[in-house]
Image (tube, one colour):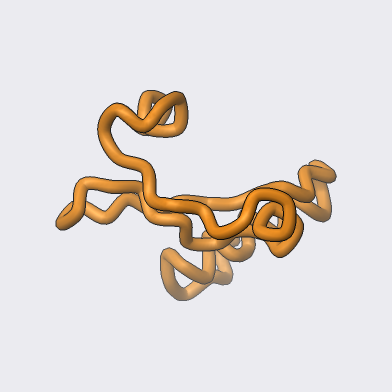
Length: 70
């Protein structure tokens, strides 16, 4: 992950590592967008998209993902 040159590239690498190393095929990384105050899906695995469809951003009050972020 140290080889990533942008936040988005590092998110892709982390998602791939979760799939390849931890064997979590439904993986993804969200990055915080301070202007919108949401966690945007940035690197979502093809398996997760196939299983759950396009993922929406999460903001305040949107469940455990946001709670963990806070």
